[in-house]
Length: 400
Image (cartoon, rainbow, N blue to C red):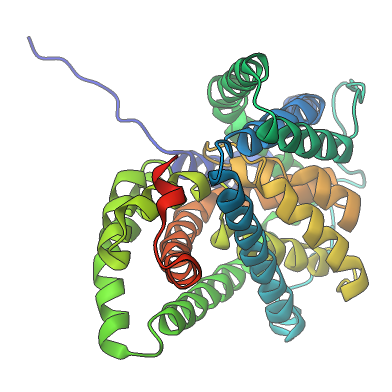
């Protein structure tokens, strides 16, 4: 019997539909409906911020708890340090690109309400209590994960698995499906305040800047690990092309894991080391996010009339940023959701700015994912070379 199923659209496509609908029909919606949708967006944001300390703690705790097992702990701690250093360098690259003045050419966004003298206000207001500051959740997750990685405990491991499962369930089945609605309220507010067209015109060049930064950085990275040998560099790139295509189409680093492993085994010739590194770093080594999110944040700051932050302001943000990356959940948009409180704390992001960077990130997520998985493919080659020189062989890896 003939049956018809509606196609499933990814999150980026849904956000594009929301954006187009707001552009075409936003001004025709009744004022009360716009205010209600804006209130829903604010409530969803409040709910996320309320749950976020648990998300940060459980993900960071689970990440560090996975670094267990005799001699492998030393290897994993070194690997964790290399990943954090790589992510930190990427955030500095983003700051360097931003300081070149390229972002200054983006249009400045100035609100000028159309047809009204007032900004859009939420129809109702509800505030979720803050039960634990996010930075405390980071510290507690780091300390607890480190402690139980050295002193394994069955109850701690079960708690870690259950907490991670509930957090993933909340995000995958609860919050992530509502992201288009979350964005809609804030997009309608920007439309009402007369800045939505300015946003679109302003941030298209930004995405080109990020893409160019990706291209240059990855090319340089693979050239370095190939010792600037063109033949070897092309060999690496040939092996990772299926990884890039899979990452772009699925927008998931986890979905590329089998292909990433296969490509890494070809590029390193070390199966044991590759199978220890890739699964451990797939969700925490995020070159693409480390470049995209800071560049988006810096451009949004400038567009909304703020000054370009000094290095003294940016460095504390970068340190919190790389630690928070170890607490990212592997779901679409997970890379930005954990970062919103950090952006609000260190850069003074408003609700509209947070919603804007969320939408930009998800729209650009295919390119971010590609850069994440290619950066991880480069990391495994680099670490393989380092550990081969340090240990000559890798018996500790076989014990994991």
